[in-house]
Length: 212
Image (cartoon, rainbow, N blue to C red; front, side):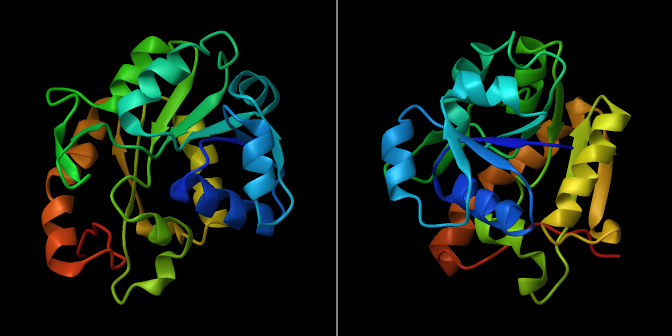
């Protein structure tokens, strides 16, 4: 795993880029407005580029763009993403009046499955979408060990993503391989629970876990 590209500049992308760059990884952030994103950045050293350049130059890419527009954005990068690993941490939902998830955008499928169909030469791996973004990069901050699920068709790609998760602080026994990309529809469906948790608990750190 050489350069890691992250699509997006929101809270999820910022948290992932900060943790990975701090651990010594070469990180490139893909954005539609390079100058603005670079000027606002206050974290460790990273490189900023447009989406196309990021897709070309990174060997592993992370989709941290809003899930309701991810398919359109990344589908346009089919050639640049050919042969690459794409880690999808987003969830595709319809937004309600409060800005919270109000339903699944792909109720009989998943964003990960749609990305894999749109990018047949790309190895898509779904993970880290069952938790608030702070837990993605600090899993030991919860009182109960959380679970990071893996879904994907390529075993070698999932092994590489396991290494990435280790860099983010995830022990091997907290990572659960569910199987092929079809299984991503199960973890993405957790979004139906999230607005109710947030209304009850606020934006406190949370994650789904498998009790063992």
